[in-house]
Image 1 (cartoon, rainbow, N blue to C red):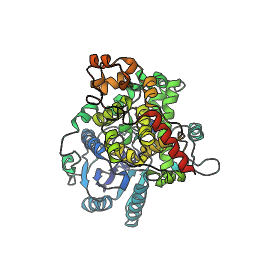
Image 2 (image 1 turned 90 degrees about the vertical axis):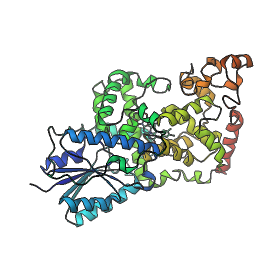
Image 3 (image 1 turned 60 degrees about the vertical axis):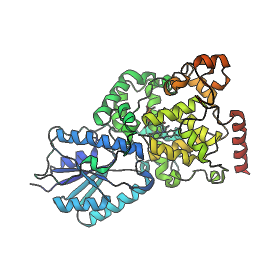
Image 4 (image 1 turned 120 degrees about the vertical axis):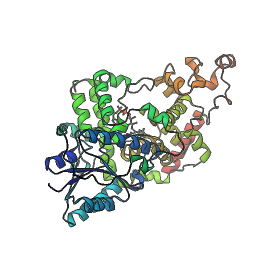
Amino acid sequence: MKRPAIVWFRRDLRLEDNPALNAAIETGRPIIPVFIWEPDEGGAAAPGSAGRVWLHASLSRLRERLQQRGASLVVRQGESHEELGRLIAETGAVAVYWNRRYEPDIIKRDAAIKESLLGSGIEAISWNGSLLFEPQSMPNKSGRPYQVFTPFWKACLSRGFDPPAAAPAGKFRHPSAAPRSLAIDELGLLPQINWHDPILSAWDVGEAAADRRLRTFADASVADYSTHRDIPGIDGTSALSPHLHFGEIGPRQIVQAVAGTGRGSRGAQVFLSEVGWREFAHHLLFHFPDTARAPLKPDFERFPWEPDDDLLRRWQRGKTGYPIVDAGMRQLWRTGWMHNRVRMIVASFLVKHLLQPWQRGAEWFWDTLVDADLANNTLGWQWTAGCGADAAPFFRVFNPIAQGEKFDPQGDYVRRWIPELAQLPDKSIHQPWTTPAAELEQAGVSIGSDYPAPIVDHKRARTRALMAYDKMRL
Ligand code: FAD
């Protein structure tokens, strides 16, 4: 029997459109699929609490899918390089195949692993499994990285997209004796105190679920995406972000499914451009690797933030007194996800109304989002704080009342996540403190006890934010 090839699964927890898996199968060698849990891998790229919950479920689904094809997932824990070395020694494997990741510390680690494997005579090959265009392959006309989205995406569109590659049919060849494996439970990915059940019941995890979600969205929702995507009270976006982050589905599959619905439709074009923002985020993080921690615009190093643990905590718990902000923070806590429009509102509120450093918001998102993704989260926070590439200018301060009234006009979203406000009339749902006393009583709400009074006054907070911005520019 030929000696085996290891397929190292990482953020590509799927069988379809998986170039590393396909290449391994094409060699005709028995394959050993492995997942290595390295708790601190890649520093800032190590999954947060909600990400670990998703990963636990996703590994279980991957194991089932591999079993259906006659292969068993080997699960290990430890430093990736050492674990791969052990597995090679135990199985006599002659090749290790994987799909690339793009977080700065992971790139360095993987380069070192590749060099060492090649040095010991092991075939080590990596592929692109998670992006439409890899960052190193997309210089702008002057040979430098893009920092503005529109020309970046135009360049992507002009290159055209590769189709996804189907997984080979039939059973996979596997070694006669399966290597030792941990049970997924032994990785300790789930928290000791059970706060994660609501998250898991809000989602269907895994490749099959991602595929179903994509088909339903492409059939029923993408045509309306451009008008529905900003309304958090309706299910108008794809909710594919955690599936994409863990590689349960890849962007080539998304492009193909949406193109089938007529890529010319406005909804499909706008949706694909959002997938383009994901590409742009990876492009930026690759070329500006410090931006997960530091602002891209260096002036912002001098921004006079006013760190305050109490304000941060009230924001985290959804107790700012601004319903659209609090609804978003509560959706995040309950489901591990938040609508994009609301992410922008809550992030802007933390940074501008409360003058908290964007990095503290990014850290909370990192721990609580099931789709926490170093590239997208960094872009989202730097964009909102005005310190990133192609960012919203700092002086454009979102008014949380006006944003609520515009994007949640009947208060459906607020009523869903803040049931104590459910009986308020539409006209004051986004500023409950202005509701006449009789109406408050009728709705059963007492401001200050059932629901907080505003943590800051919007107009004063706006003026303070603009003064802070001016101070930075002195
Ligand atoms: P859809 O609208 O259906 O979009 C399809 C896909 O395109 C998404 O799944 C996502 O992969 C990508 N996408 C959409 N919008 C963006 C965007 N603005 N930037 C980058 N990619 C985008 N997204 C994450 O995946 N992980 C994060 O950690 C993350 N943190 C964010 C933090 C802030 C402060 C902000 C403002 C945005 C953040 N986003 C993040 C981007 C965006 O909010 C989510 O990708 C989106 O809400 C996911 O929902 P969806 O899958 O229904 O998106």
